[in-house]
Amino acid sequence: ESILSRASGDSLIQCLECDMVGCGPTFLDNRYGNNQHAMLHFLMSGHKFGVTCGPMGEIFCMACGDFIYHECFDQERERLFVEIHFPSLCWKETPILRGVDPSSFIFTPEHGVMWRGMMATYPNPVSTQIVHASRFAAKRLLMFRGLVGEKTIDWGPKALALAIYQQRHLNKELIAPVGIYNLGNTCFINAVLQCLIHCPLLQDLFLRQMVHPYKCCEALRWGSNKLSCLTCELDKLFLEYYGSSIGIDVIAASEEQRVPSEAFFSNTIDNPNSTSKPNSSFAGLTCNKKQHPEYRGHPIVPSSLLAEIWKNIRSIARNDQHDSQEFFQAFLDSLETHTLFYQKLAREMRQVYYQSEIKHSTPFELAQSKVAEIDSVKKIFTGILRSTLVCEKCGCKRIQSEPFTNISLPLAKEFQASASTAETGSRSSPRKGKISVEICLEHFTLPEVLTDPVHCPSCSTKTRTIKQHTFSKLPKVLCLHLKRFDAAGSNKINEFVSFPALGLDLGSYLPHWSEIIQGHGEDETRNSNGGADSPKVLYDLFGIVNHKGSLNQGHYMCRVKFGEHWYNCNDSFVSKAGEGTGENDVRQSDDAYMLFYIQRAK
Image (cartoon, rainbow, N blue to C red):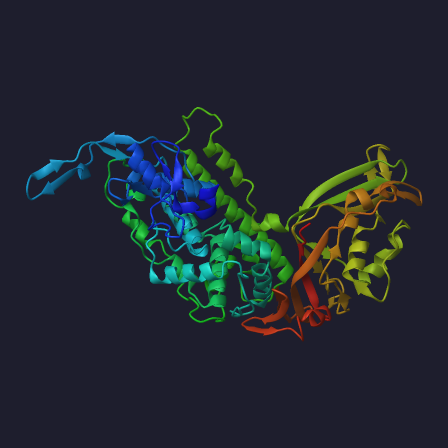
């Protein structure tokens, strides 16, 4: 305890020949009270080798009085780093092999050609592509965590600048608002992208967890018939956006040319005796995007992302005006397809070398199980909607569940048309003349009598049926779509809809507290849970998509929350919203079209 109170991490050394742990030499920690217990242990016991106990994990040689390099040890340390931080790109530990290698022979002027003996090798049991992908991921993680002392990375000037910035600003907000250029009727895309970028969970997903590093995906896709990836383009957009907000070219730092560690690459199982560097074709693994923000606040040009969107979402592959809600839904679906392909590719490349292994629980397999737990963009927005059908004649109840990524809420005119069909219950019908998101949700979850009879399996005939929607699972991020476009009437509903910026409670719409139990005639029994209060499931607003104009033409803008302040984003133009935090100005918006809420931590 006395030692640990004065030293920790890499200032401690553990003997590799016994289990002794002590403070290392003074050049590791020269603070007062460093008694160099590890050095005394080496002198008294005759042991020679130790390893530092921190993230550096370096080998210390007492005979040399300095740190030494051991190829196999460094490879295993890097493998463990990947296994801990990127389980989707890790591989099993393999035994050390000994053999004759061309590098075993050296030439000296005094003795000519000499053999250094049997050389230890540590072959990686995966393809070179996996090794490259893991190295790209490790470099990016080290940069974003500001670990500038990591010796396995050859720090270029741009990568070093980013790492130093991250070291000084590690706990600050990741992204400040930056404009996005309109590339020709792409305002509906820009507005949605701004809301996605300012979603805290997505920032964590792409910039902290790094669930889909584009360089890793490029390495895995190398040589395949899939030349591009939509999720990669979104990852690059996050990096470019972040780089513009802090004034550092993050993409250039990620792609900065470096000489790979030969110890990590040369001994792959493809050719265990090879001393050559990795396939030179990987030197061309760079992003095709040429525009990078050089100055803080410079707007983003999403040209490569737009090209990939047009390629994967054919319905909007023209410079025409489109609906932002339809784009949002199609965008999430396409992202999920590309994300699953990336995960499948990494899994197949890892497993190809383990087909003949005896199946048993290993640390590697435990790490594999963590891969399924990682969120994707679509999972963050996905909840489960519960549809209940109740026969009014016999009370037979049928339930069907379906996933959703956004909820479309009817507005005023549709209230008047359907209010008469909602039978009286424990909750009042929506009020006329004043609309709020709470009233829209109330209306959405009220039981309604279907116009056409529905077949009842219990009565074996078509009967009058009550239908109700509730939420059996609420998403981490809730997207509410206000149905302002009335296609049947060929007009747009411009009524003001009020909405809360903080504390939208959806707990009362869970089935246990709101679902109809049975219905007979005009009397229906509602689940009241014995009068107990429903749980509080609170959501806070962080993004709004606004639409100005008519049904046939208009313009999309958005408002996003950064820290405690709200900002107006009109394509490449960004400004603060209103006075103070801007919340009052945002809540008075009369053209809100999509609302993005994040679930408050319990």
